[in-house]
Image (cartoon, rainbow, N blue to C red; front, side, top):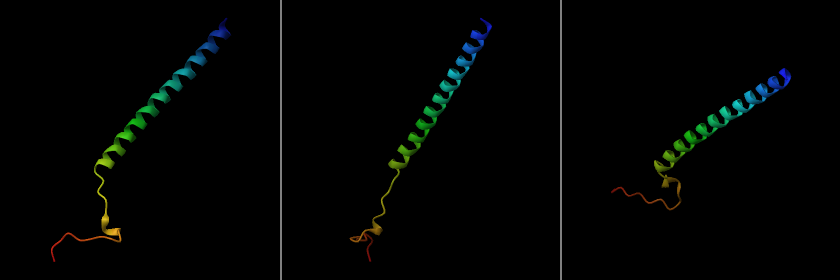
Length: 59
């Protein structure tokens, strides 16, 4: 009986560790996604590398 309780405690500890890792990873992924979304909103294309670039400044 004592051995079965030890095994159950070990299994419970492993499951708890897996759950903690899962929540940490999902939180990290959500934070990375949030950062990448804001980077797309602030993106400005550089048309100076295009072959058909026309300057809008008055000469």
